[in-house]
Amino acid sequence: MKELTLETLVAVFEEIFGRGLFWAMVAAALIVTALYLYVLIRDRAMSMRKFLVAQLSMPIGAILAVLFMLEVTSSGLGDMGGPIDAIVLLAVAAVGAIGMAILVYTAQSLVRGNQN
Amino acid sequence: MAGSSPFTTRRGFLSLAAAGAAATVTGGAAYGNRLATKARIVIIGAGAGGTAMANRLVKRLDGATITIVDPRAEHLYQPGLSLVAAGLKPASYVVSKTTDWLPAGVTLVPEAAAAIDPLVKTVTTAGGTKLEYDFLVVAPGLVLDHDAIPGFSLDMVGQNGIGALYAGPEHAARTWEAARKFTEEGGVAVMTRPSTEMKCAGAPLKHAFLLEDIASRTVGAGKFEVHYTAPQGALFGVPIVAEKVRMLMGQRGIKTHLQHKLVSIEPGQKRAMFEKSEIDTTTKEEIKTTVEMPYDYLHVIPPQRAPEVIRQSGLSWADKWTDQGWVECDQKTMRHLRYPEIFALGDVAGVPKGKTAASVKWQVPVIEDHLVAALQGKEGTEVYDGYTSCPLITRVGSAMLIEFDYSNNLVPSFPGLIAPLEELWISWLMKEVALKATYNAMLRGKA
Image 1: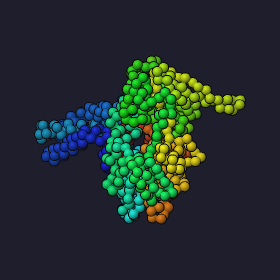
Image 2 (image 1 turned 30 degrees about the vertical axis):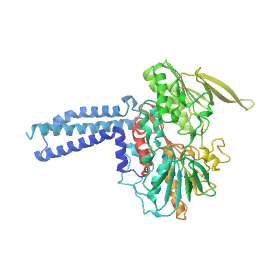
Image 3 (image 1 turned 135 degrees about the vertical axis):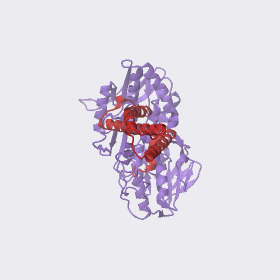
Image 4 (image 1 turned 180 degrees about the horizontal axis):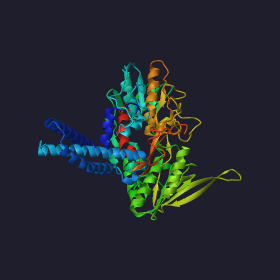
């Protein structure tokens, strides 16, 4: 690739997850992010109680993200062969953890409303 | 202009696969003003090379008559065949339509090229259409000479333990039927490769490694043997890679038989005959003997040659690969040495190494540069250094990302980050998920 375009990058992700799943995931991520911003603006503050629960959910998100990634790429943990693999796997875990935290925080805020 | 954008990355073909980690993302390809020309350009072949070439030329030229000649309605993503033959992807994974990839402004003649006259500068199709050209890009691919192996025929593939994954998507899928039986029941697998130049020299290795891996997870160790045979004296053309492969095969218990050329098979008895070459240590003479190997699974890769039309037209090397007929061309510019208005692209090119999509990827911008420069009465400046890449799968889930050039140098895209001779998950990800997307982008002339 002499010119790496956004279009090709999108094509790579479509290939990884399948077109339908990839765009469903993009849509889900956008919706959750929008809702997260909505509750932050609505509440005008971070609730530390909700944030604590959100943080507790992060390891679950990390594990789920890693399992999902391994599943869609026909791989296993035994295939990790070098530092770069560990870095990529940790990055996947980090994305899963952060995504889960945002999801849990937003879900709590929407369900319970502005309590604090 | 290709190669001159500040946003370009040198080894971007693979850097893309790093999911942007080491790459720069731009909004689109940066092309300058299109060159007005009335040139007639004929491209023989709508495979990876011809299609990418057509898409790039359409973007560069205004008013040119671009004709692409290819009878095949199906476009094959050939790097996927080794995945199909290991049961990891369905046959449909590699198939698309030729017309899906061709841009507006290019005329497809869905016929085979029957004759090329490099003196009069015409291409005649099987249907009798005569196409005159100012520039010709020869990219018809190669021919698999299955008839060269007595006892073997393509209709055997998938039955009685015979596989032949190069033959196309259906044959690759049938190859997996035969190979799966081996991985479930065990026995002796014999892998072969031809003595000629061949497409993707890593594919026979991948097939051997994948079957060993799957068999060890399925039927289990001790119930099967994998034998890797090759007519050559090394397991890979690049010495440092050959040594690594030798070590891996040793670790995995894959027995290697170098200097063994498959000459015939007896499918009824499940025996393969090999011609073994040895140099007598005292007389220094080459001694050839016949070796018989029984098999439960046999993977056949036939000799490979340039299509007949190329060999008949006088475009081939006269003193190299005389039994194979690859096009005589400058290995740095891909330009024909006797007919400067002809370029060779992809498998048919008579250059050392690199009958791969990655080679095509690097050859296309070089030919584009020299062709467009010639239209302006100038000399092109881009040089092809023989770069090719081989995500050499060693297990389901791991691969080595091997990239090299004409000089057998390793040219890793991510030195210090992705080690070329290490079995890595990220290299597997590149092969399994990122390569097809980058290939498709290349077809559209965007890579």
